[in-house]
Length: 284
Image (cartoon, rainbow, N blue to C red; front, side, top):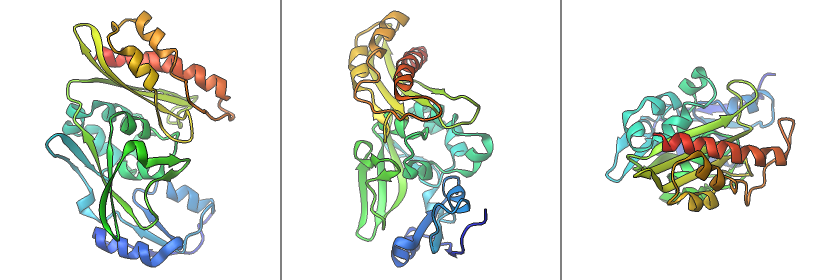
């Protein structure tokens, strides 16, 4: 299907983009890599009057070191994040997760910030960002503000950003020396995960000193498995101990039921995938 007719602007600065967004009002949509918006336009599930293409805003690209955090520009592609040495050293979980996003073609077009702003609970980046206490820097008419990951994801395809705001970069605290793994369960390659688990683990002397566990597609937003995190602390990094801790992974979740599996199936998957993810992370 061909998209409905729309006007198009391509600003080169954040300020120009915000002006265009304000002028368009409810009839404007922002596009970056286009991997989320273009299918929607082609199916005419949305027909905005104005498309604001932010792909030429160079200030929103790249990865940089910022002291106790690394900063990933919202327009940095998944492929660039995947191969960046700063991300691998200080936020290995992001490297692991972004490597599982769709296929190489999409990873070279899709953007890190675009996927997060889309806020699909089945998206691969929300749970890792939540687990690592990421912060989202957004620009709007009133200036710049920072939103914690715990507050950023509000509901299905809904974030704490206002319609007049733009995600410019993501700040991730440094988790140097932590093991990490992203365990994703799909029926066919490159599919959205039926369930996935993001785990970052710090091991000291054979015991788990700290753990961070995020859940993908177990509710209307990414979730933290805090009961698992607490249960893991002080435990040996063995299958038996991790299995016992992972048994509570589905507590407090509200997974969907669809053609890929019902809610109970997803709850079972969450415990299995959490065990696998934590053990893999604990192994380095």
